Image 1: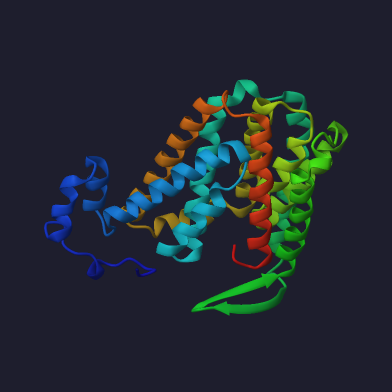
Image 2: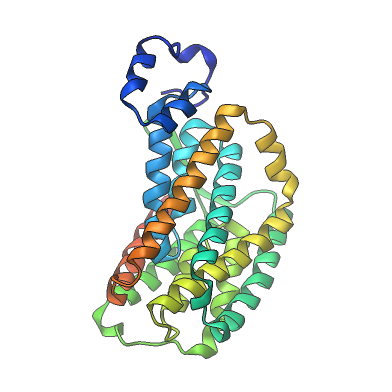
Length: 300
């Protein structure tokens, strides 16, 4: 599979691939027939966005990280980042319309306001720093991975949080609402600086005494504010420039990812009542641990 899709690598729509479309859902087949991407690529993007959105609805993070990896298969990194950011922001706004009544307003104010300010600061720092400090570089096959100082620091902190979350001794431990501004500032700053804010946000909100619904709704609201804050600093021109470069096929892939993410969030909302808080804690704990290891290794 080529990294950069082009006209000459696709079979004609009315050839062998065209016959295969007959057994494919009409919408997906129609999308694929109008551009340079195959039906399977649309299905892959849709499946990843759907299940990532379901998982992210409960954990509070993961959609951007997972979807970015898949988009990077088909596009240069810059375009993959822009596409992922648009899906992430659109899905957060959609989730907010589903669950805004469940937001704990007191927790939201204490957490989200410092988070928004810190996200702005982190994004400003990112614009000042021309490049990250690389600790070492290694190869696996044809791929090269860079381990940076920033990612090692974030990875170390996340591993500590994950161990605390998964260890039985800390099951009933609560940070208390007095630490919410600190948690918001930490989450927002790293969100603006590197985009890795979801895990920190989930850890602090999970231990702030919120019930399941309050944790999920308040986390979504905070994530939306942080996204808006950092996008304002990065500049809308960043997204406009790269989306403008996209052809019709790329735009349809983006639309497919957004619609699939919406569907995933809608499905997760229906299961909200049935999901137990202890499983939410487990999901968050294990996802943070996996994220921390991959981050420390420079894979994401």
